[in-house]
Amino acid sequence: KAGVTQTPRYLIKTRGQQVTLSCSPISGHRSVSWYQQTPGQGLQFLFEYFSETQRNKGNFPGRFSGRQFSNSRSEMNVSTLELGDSALYLCASSQSFYEQYFGPGTRLTVT
Amino acid sequence: QQQVKQSPQSLIVQKGGISIINCAYENTAFDYFPWYQQFPGKGPALLIAIRPDVSEKKEGRFTISFNKSAKQFSLHIMDSQPGDSATYFCAPSGGSNYKLTFGKGTLLTVNP
Image (cartoon, rainbow over all chains, first blue to last red; front, side):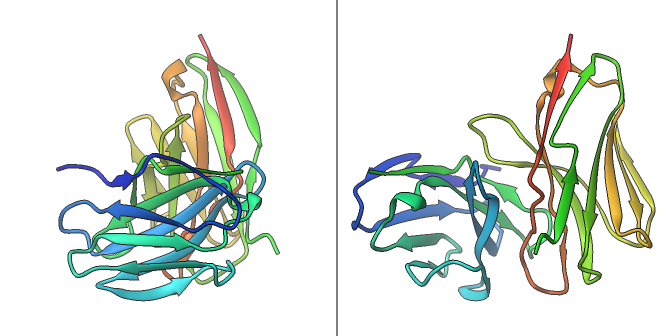
């Protein structure tokens, strides 16, 4: 089976812009989670989707949003980018929630 | 409020030695206790996980020990190899909140 794929792998944006990151889960997986990883804060939970429904959302401002499509693919969007949004954004998929498999991440740099 | 405390922050062991990483948690609703391994430039990979109905689980050189009363669980890596050099995270979850709560990570270095 192919693993979790994330696109793009690297991204450079300017403050104030918005960005959309994409995640394709492992075939058959219906749960997709997003995490932000930074050296200072570590791995922090953003949100989790199952069958197009958001089941939980982390403590991030409303500039961070996400969605899941009927084929389980997911996107996350960050509007009005700030320097502090520079991070590795990780997507993970699983059949129900447990045993999450992570993708390689999207490295976002905000200048 | 730090729900998950992982220790040590870094660990250096010799090849063939035993690596032990600990994780303490506060949330008694946690019912799933995984360990993840992350190499530089890669996403975390699930290494081993345990449910609270057992006190120990072993998979190859990796063992999880779980102490429900102490609200702690640990990862033991037997016969540590240089290829085990990576960052390890505990990430318990539960209570139907559908999120992994990651520890700060332990950087393991195994010297040849």
